[in-house]
Image (cartoon, rainbow over all chains, first blue to last red; front, top):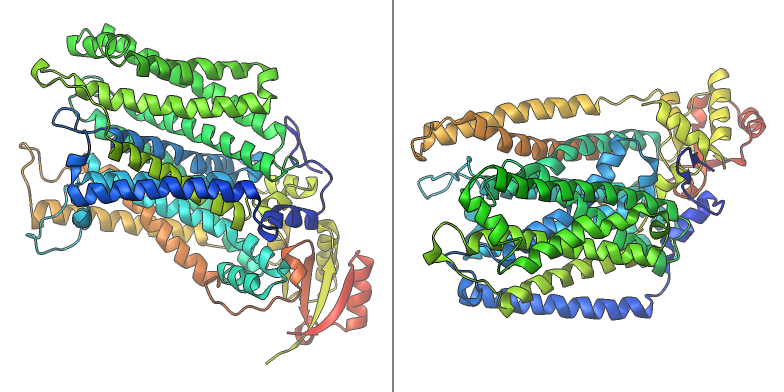
Length: 457
Length: 171
């Protein structure tokens, strides 16, 4: 059994290779449990509400939303940034930890990557519908056209955003899928029913596990991993420049790119924690996703929470120290106090204060509390985006254009809808895809494979 | 046309490595090895090397040049637009978009390279010498003609190294 020096054994229970395969593909072989069906029903209902809300938006236009001349970005951009943030963890998890040769990632990366793909799909809905005429969304592609040919503005962060998100979706989906190919082959070769053999056989792309395949497979993982690591940083930096390159008080700051990237990884890791606790609880995978794994995620969350707290404090400090009265107003009279006080303090409490509880070992080993904290962080990160988007726009330079923004049911509906789409995707993932990377877990089962493996790099 | 192969099955990576060493010492040509997870020693023992990272670098290099040329063509030659008097050839603001598009290009080209070189694609007809290779066994395969060894000798040699079984199969 491989025992990491700091972390102890990565997989508990003296498993054999065959047991690992059987344990992980058990949910695919067994019948769907009752809770899964109920959860699926709820998710599909939520997604259906989203579809109705999207239909209203497309049919009647953006007038169905509460956004206006002052608060031109409402819930849609809040939710876009929130989902993109959640979508960062998969790549951050798999890729940073892959590059850093952290073996404990093997039990978690698959679920984190799945989450990334579904979250990015949800995120992509928002900017598309925000264009107003979504059927003309293809105008954003830079192709020789009959409109001039008028090219898109390559200097605009909004265009960079489109490209960055498309590239991010492409790379995370392919990284996720090709990671699954050997596992699909395992299911194919263990399957007893013809239908299952045919479906997973098709998904496995004819994988056999030969050295020729493993050699290129490893090469592909490191190439995609290496370049996607750059993308993790650049995607959210670009999202932040959508804000920071404007002249709106509270947005116009050089702190934004690192602040956004760290915030994204924070919310993503919190969602990974939520998901992993759910998986191990409902599918009895405690021997693969051990307490030690959750402990490691909790430690990372405490660390990132400190960075978040520092970023919030820096923003407020610079607003005061910079001596700009508009910045002062935004932070001291429109966030710390004022109409949006609740959102500001909810953000501070959820993101900077409550995660500090995880300094305590007792809290880190209490799975229920960890689950609740992970949910609180996700709520807090939503409030952070609310703070950034709404407070700055609602009261900017001209008091005559000040306004108060409350979303309409259509805007809330789209958000609920994306939650439904995300959960539907995750539930399908639970049911039909191996939730833990089988071949990767096997590679850390024995000490010899790990030491040799590490030595060669 | 199917050919006869010797298939040896191991249940442990150390035994497999011993088997590989024994085969190499006796100059028995190994046709292919199938493992449930990537093993660097096995890949090295098979003498396989990949120039994948170099290919990815070339893709990136070509992508950077093509993308920058494309941006220059669209923004300066084909349809220059005056954004508040800023220069049309705005190199610094091309950097980020070039970076992201380069990453996208490397990804797409690397996926195709992987698919072509490892011969992994949807609907591929594959030959799996032993189905247990994707589960818990390490399978070493020798082609009868090329191995330069008789079944009995090979069987004895591999069983001495800890093989679980050695059998003959037409593939």
